Image (cartoon, helix red, strand yellow):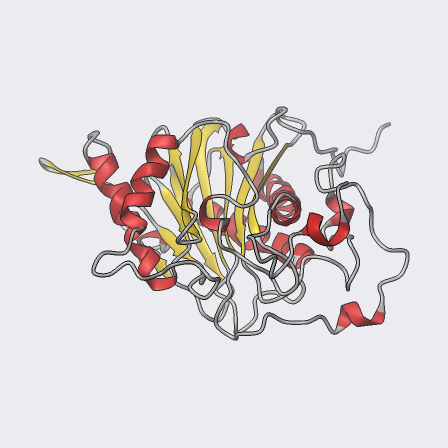
Length: 342
């Protein structure tokens, strides 16, 4: 009899993006002079969401609305943004865009879109941040909503546009996979970690054991982890960091189940970034369930869904850095600048 205790994982579609999860679109917008941007995930209908925060310096909005005791059990969009605390105005742009279309939580005649958000710090990356009285993130968020689609750019795009890691240009990554029953999991992540996503000074990614095909070069894992990889360089400033992510599934989940999915997915950041969840990061993972498929089969089903979510998020981190492109001064370099085409 075949062993089915560890069922295989499958690509959902050829996109290998979070939008392989039924019921989702994603939009990016950035400003090249600003060197920052916004990423917006929009469900086609109200969705269940939760949040898990592991970094020591997070920046979020509407995170309390996702608490297990919250009375509003739906969200209408999730935002990832650069700009540090200034970037939190991006959610206002998404709220106004949704409200104009009658999308939101109904309270009598009022319509209030519920739009949680997380931000990363990209204020010192060389971009022009002299925006005066009005930070541009609300405008960028509306542009991202207008651009929302099934296909989108990764690498130097959206919330990952101005991101950096300790040694390489950071970026926006995405990936997806399905369980044998067809349940899909996808991730999008803006990688701006204080740590490193590659092993030591070499080109291989910490996430290499979870790679599908050659989605981030197909270089595999080193036969031995070099000693210097265990004492990796950290990004110069203690406050220029944070990796923020959304893990999504088309399964039907309760909010406690979505919270457990976010917790399990955080393992993917630990597989792909070293070190991670530091006092210098604001690492946040949102979980989003669109409800197009049945619930997982009990606790074992939820565990398998979470294990897949961790794998997918690890791959998304590596893809974000692998696909990133440097700015003109190439400080820090992108992966291709340092290691060549793959």
